[in-house]
Image (cartoon, rainbow, N blue to C red):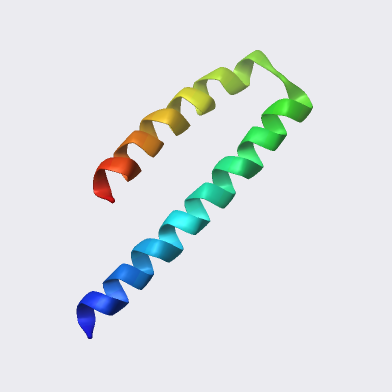
Length: 54
């Protein structure tokens, strides 16, 4: 039972993270500032960690 709930939490976290990533990428496309380069690099690092976790 617990493992099922944990998997659900992981799935929800993954969906939330992907939603945030899409939102930030849309913002980056809209504004296209040089300032967005750092957050995007951070996102790629974050996605790498998420991929390892899954």
